[in-house]
Image (cartoon, rainbow, N blue to C red; front, side, top):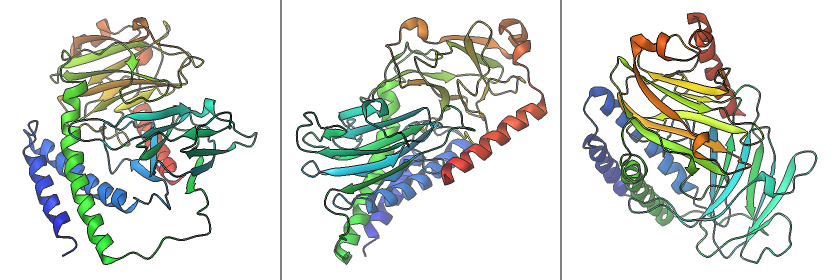
Length: 392
């Protein structure tokens, strides 16, 4: 049976989900099984996208196939490469806050993260007045060739990221890839042996994916003191011009976490965003709940700071970040397309206060107030914006 190994991998994957150390409630398990479904879909998708001679971009993660504390503000795409070939990427720059590219030498595993061999954003490429561009990736030295990037030994994957700050007005661009000299040709017909191999690869990817991202928080989050966030630091993995501040929380329902961070100047960081993540190391529901905010979406106080209010109970405030029943989880702030290094004073300050004391403890509390109708309008805007983005 061509699918037998994949079926066995699904059964093993369910046991990984059920035996995860943080599964204590029905909600924990239900979310784990939902995460498993998205992972199954994604691994099948990725295994069938492994075409290095006739590559194409696929969505690496999204609202229904989440991975690795996915950023609610980012569209992720990737294509597979070989390091001895040349590839052509053509596209049109959208109006998103950031567009970046990264070449990795492999995939994530439970023991290591892949090395970043090349990383840059669109400030490093020539773009025509109409927004179109053409990039080339290949084994030859770049020398003075414009828009040419050398593929180092072991290059295996090209990742592209489009990052939104204003969900309503910014629009995604276009992007395509082909191997140089391959346009007009076609791959050979598939065989049953190839299909069996792909099912086997998808199963191994599934098990590795689950084990990796259950271990990942231990590397970067859980060794930090609870209910704190780090100073801004370059994001692990070699992303170009991105810094992050991370942490993990553990809050009672009558506790509120106030995270105060300076709103970055657009010239310094066109993108600044905050989000929560579940113990499965994926984003919370950011479509139907406000579990994330960008600087453009948040209400900035008169002193130039954004104050995120992380709470289970509704405080009636514009910058409320909904926990959606997650007593414990992950915190992350990202700054992207940076024009300068960030300092400790650019980072967040964290305070835990009783829910009932918010009016006295939160600066500019009255300025943050929103009515139930205003809140419903905010959620409706999120739902519409994500729907447009996914189809754009």
